[in-house]
Amino acid sequence: MKKQIKFLNKIFNKPITCLTAYSASIAKLLDGNIDIILVGDSLGSTLYGMKNTRGVTINMMKLHGKVVTENVKKSIVVIDMPYKSYTNKVMAFKNARKLINFTKANVLKLEIQKKTIPIIKYLSKKKLNVIAHIGVTPQSFIDFKKIKIVGKNDQEKKQLLELAVNAELAGAQAILLECVTEKVSKEITASVSIPTIGIGSSKYCDGQVLVFDDLINIDDQKKLPRFVKTYMNFGKETKKVLKKFSKEVKSKKFPNKKFTYQ
Figure 1 (spheres, one colour):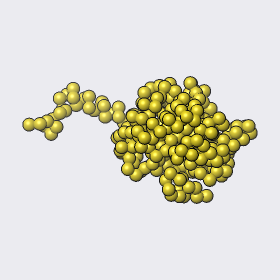
Figure 2 (cartoon, rainbow, N blue to C red; figure 1 turned 30 degrees about the vertical axis):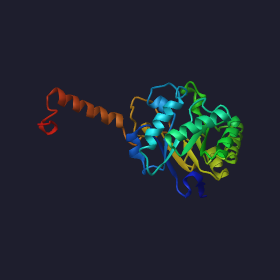
Figure 3 (cartoon, rainbow, N blue to C red; figure 1 turned 180 degrees about the horizontal axis):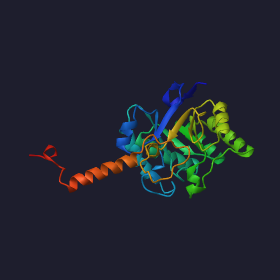
Figure 4 (cartoon, rainbow, N blue to C red; figure 1 turned 135 degrees about the horizontal axis):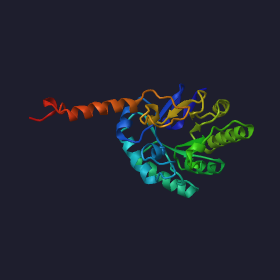
């Protein structure tokens, strides 16, 4: 099934790629090579060492969002609304407008439950592009160790299907599924006309997203979730470079004449 992402003004007929970026250098690398760049509130744990995402603020999202969008020319930029920044319609619109006006991001992403549907509808009526994040919603957790896959029983399956359909009816232009079982992810993807983007939610989604730092394994001491495939071991390779640099400095091999102004 071809699915339209309205904010892209085009039809995607192949899987969508999405990775996170929080800095200019990573944004430049991803731009044009990845369809969607997500400025995620995962920056709380990834960059700032927070135990969860609840400490991430609007100002943090504004600063990181702006530096990413300023360095992206081809990809679509999606930005997360942080914890407790959209607890009611008025607050949601006020903070959403702050984020979009300051960063110039294309789309907002909200972690939603049933009670959040009216907020999506309200933001959509205000002409804001919204992605609905369902399944495991990290902002709901103080301790990430307690996160577990959802959709294993009939009740969870029904709730997730209803949430996805209602999110689309409310105006969401895509749905992000996190840690949803393969069977339920497949059913949701077939039940909505907007794209689904999965993280730990099977190949049956219309696209896939990962945290960039996990993709390249920057922190090789971090225990990664089962759904993360590491495409390189950046942490391990970097340690080799650091040892070489340190050795050359201590032995006076660096800087040599090539790297010295005369």
